[in-house]
Image (cartoon, rainbow, N blue to C red):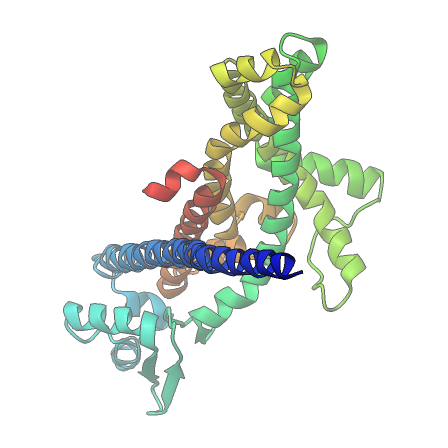
Length: 373
């Protein structure tokens, strides 16, 4: 009995000693894992901070260039905003309101500060008008802050651009992958022919033919216009489906060609032959190995295209009578409203910069090699 008790005590002591030995290892492993997670988060935040600082710097430089191009021209912006008849007294009041009576460097400083911190204007009656930041100027044609005009029109353009972009990316990538997987087949030749038609077709022609076919002869869709989502979700969708289809036909063709080209390149790589030699089904090898690598250039192109389209789909908005940023830009050119013209151009540039930033972030998740950059 005593021997059994001694044996049991010895076993308990050994277990306790083993637990003591293992406990630090577990805590050390957890500590190392936590340190790695914190390090990755820290690196990611540093990456975002650097990209954001670079984006702000680029946007500031673009604002300076736009100011110098549009406001340092021989034509006087105040003269353009003065209207007719423009008396010397009225021109002086408009110049004071716009700030063009100050030296150019003061005008530039006021413009840049207004973008980040807001700006104040004094009208002819001596009243102060506050333009909250980001202030992109004042429309003397519409008598409203440019920022308000852009935001009200941006809802229309964003609805048009985001829906169409998701559709054309899905269709373009799917058809590109199918075309590459069935290289040389009838399906491949048919998809390549259709993409050639889409690439070579003008946007205004496709838009007009779509309206003629599906809004006039077959009155399935409205001829144009825009209904807000809050007002009627069904009407919102009905008014956007036809413009979406037009943009999908035009843009999916590029993505079909781009995806097919990069997929064919990836299908010839050694890792694909290795995966197939190990018995992996071809469809699984394509989706698991080839597609992620082929999507990297497609992702870059998609970010740039979406950013540009958010800046204003000029032709599509005109064809379908949608009052978005593209229409606002054309109206500012027609009315010589330089404040709106510069504001919309700067806003479009900012969208492209943001799209590039999002693409850079996505790259770090899609391609692990980008995380070391």
